Image: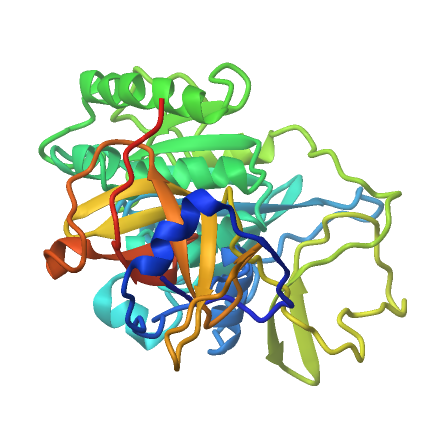
Amino acid sequence: MELSEPIVENGETEMSPEESWEHKEEISEAEPGVGSLGDGRPPEESAHEMMEEEEEIPKPKSVVAPPGAPKKEHVNVVFIGHVDAGKSTIGGQIMYLSWALDTNQEERDKGKTVEVGRAYFETEKKHFTILDAPGHKSFVPNMIGGASQADLAVLVISARKGEFETGFEKGGQTREHAMLAKTAGVKHLIVLINKMDDPTVNWSNERYEECKEKLVPFLKKVGFNPKKDIHFMPCSGLTGANLKEQSDFCPWYIGLPFIPYLDNLPNFNRSVDGPIRLPIVDKYKDMGTVVLGKLESGSICKGQQLVMMPNKIVIIEHKSIICPGYNAVLHIHTCIEEVEITALICLVDKKSGEKSKTRPRFVKQDQVCIARLRTAGTICLETFKDFPQMGRFTLRDEGKTIAIGKVLKLVPEKD
């Protein structure tokens, strides 16, 4: 097994006699690894991707405040949900401008959001930043980056026959986005049942309740409190019904429309007295360099000098090593199974093929070793010598390929 792991000094211990069988087996040099371990921080990858292309930021629609009026609370709202559920359309209705959030040509050509689009609007009580997260599964890291900036999330669901089921069933992004939003720290969730004007729905209360009944158990399982953290409402992103004003099409809905509901939300708890912490999300140039981010803690005033980290520091990546007890995902032929590395037997010299006489404590990047793996369940495989296609495997962790190898021997499980 050859690993794609970073360089760390190695230590060795004596090898026990019962493990000497591995020295009798022939082993050839494994192929180089095709990937390396990441640092497990997709939101930072998302931020890096967003910095690669400048985006046009729509001008905020200002609401003139009367003299002596209290300062408005700033709230970040992220729109999440399955691809084509109508997130950008609803955002466009709010901004009185179609495609206000899909700001680059690629997104407008494809009709799919790729980056996390931003737009701004104000109500009587609050100043809102809309974050339109991509719904396609290929851009989940971008969606995580958007959710990590948000104070509350708006989960957009398509009520159209077939689309709701596609987004909610296994493989759809509705489930994953809701789970990732909770993981990113979003405490309040508004569920917009969109496309209620579709001919397959026609503002049906039965269809609305059906979507609610399927969503509530899952959202509760993720960690949201249905009574305190979740609010459902029907709407039409295409016509704007029930977004700003109560719609005559759904007299059965007695709650506030979307924007008035946002305006009447209680203030969010802020750590104003804490140390200043502002993770940088994006940057652009306009009369100098402007940085964007969410102030997680503390307060900032005009003219205040801040320290941006890293500050004249060389970053040395410190990634994990592989040692006994390490868990990964084994991909062998068409089978995918969780495995645990229970023992490292010896190192193998890549040039000479000689095996070390001592047992390593861990393995580093570009080393070849003989290791013992235990699968979580029963799988079908063969030794590489007898059947190469059934004995060649890959180990992956956190979406990265960390090692490739081959099966040398099948060891019966001891009682």
